[in-house]
Structures are given as C-alpha cells and as structure tokens.
Image (cartoon, rainbow over all chains, first blue to last red; front, top):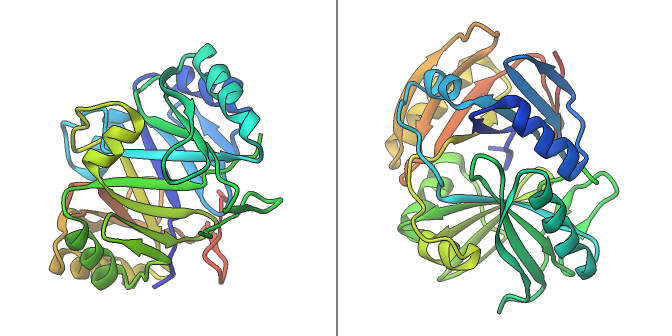
Amino acid sequence: MQQQISLITLGVADLGRSKRFYGDGFGWKPVFETPGIVFYQMNGMVLGLWPTSDLEDDMQRPGLVRPGAFALAHNVAAKEDVQPVLDRLAAVGGRILRPANAPPHGGFRGYVADPDDHAWEIAWNPSWAIAEDGRITFRI
Amino acid sequence: MQQQISLITLGVADLGRSKRFYGDGFGWKPVFETPGIVFYQMNGMVLGLWPTSDLEDDMQRPGLVRPGAFALAHNVAAKEDVQPVLDRLAAVGGRILRPANAPPHGGFRGYVADPDDHAWEIAWNPSWAIAEDGRITFRI
C-alpha cells in the first residue's frame, strides 16, 4: 500500500480561534472552509480542523482527551528561524512547551501547544531536505 | 510560511508492536529505525513512532493521554477497498471503531484504532486526487 497519509484532522473547541492561530501564527490560508470545518492544502496532504464533538461522532468514539500522545512538526530552513516562529505562535494563542534548544540527536527545536493543546514542534533539521513545494525527504 | 508538516510523531507503548501493526497492516516499510525510534517516509512528510515517554521528555510535557482529539486518514482508490483495509488492520492489532459506511458529506469511510488507540480513518473520497507518489490534492 502507498505510504500515504491523506488527512490529519485536529479536534478543536473553537473553530474561529483555531483558524486565527493557524492563519496569524503560521500564515496558512484555508483551501476550503464552512462554519463547521476548515481545510488547508499542505505538502502532499490535507490538514483539517473540526470541532472535537463532530470528530467524536464521526469516529463513533466519545471521550477524546488531551493532550494526546502525538506531535506535529513544521521544519524551517534556518536555525535562527525556530525561536521566532515559536514566539509568534505563542503571541497568537499558543503556549510554549519547550523553548528552542539543541536535542541530542542534532538540529534545533522547540515545542508549542496550539489553543487546543495539540503539540507542534518547530524544528531546524539540516539533514532533511525541504522542497520548494514543502515536500520533506528523510535523511540521516 | 510554507503550508508544510514535516513530521507526524505518534507516541507508542511498544515500538515492536506498533512496527508490526504498520508493517503487516499497511505494508509500510521504515526508512530508518533504531531500537528506540522508527521513521517512515510518507507522501511529502515523515511518520515517526516513538515511545510516549521519550516524546513527553522531548516536548517537556508529561501526562500525555489517550485517545487524543485527532485522526489520521489513509485514502484508498476504490470504495471496495475501505472495509478490507479496516479488517486487515483489525487482524494485526487494531480495533475497529466504526465499520465503513457513507458519511453525509460523501465518499465512504470507517475508523480503526491502532494498538495505542490512535485513530485512523480509511477513506474513499472520489473528489480528492491521489498522485502516484501519494500526494493528495484537496478538491470539493
């Protein structure tokens, strides 16, 4: 089967608040939105924001909790970009979990929680190529 | 900023168990692995499996809980493929949350939880193009 993820859906409490966070913090523009859902075209996949109750109904599993055991990462092109992105996200409704520093495995990274406590790692990883269209290629 | 997610990291309790689930269920092959982490090259981004305690340490946030308020989706090319994929994932350590059926917004989908309760939607969406390399393009 294709090594493919088509959609990442984040359950959110307030769609407008989340849209402001992703728009003002990352500068991302929706490809489609209604009062009930927002989609972003990402690098080969789609990011969706959906009220948590709708996600619970759709997956037929109530009781989703947070913070969940996952993280999303956004890589930047330069080490010097990491902390400013974390700061900007914190200024528009995020909360810094870990200020940027160098992990044992190399590179430079920090973590910020979005308004619903979903964790984003902002990372500079000089090994991983970032294509112009955002596609990421794993390298050691 | 690029509309880009470089890495999706799932916190797991047993790396070997998760590797078997993703390998036997989806047929995915790691691009890199150590006894402590597994990476898959996906469609423009990387999927990582990491012990939850390591993820907690790295983001400096203990107490990650489950099931988290998110879902990942894998799209298939035909409606007839949805339920068999759910069944195969359930046979290798997953748990079906919702058998496949047609949602109000169109297409065909079901949900399965991985061994750590992370939700996967298996979906057929005739509107969204799937490129040969797995890239997904949003369309209505």
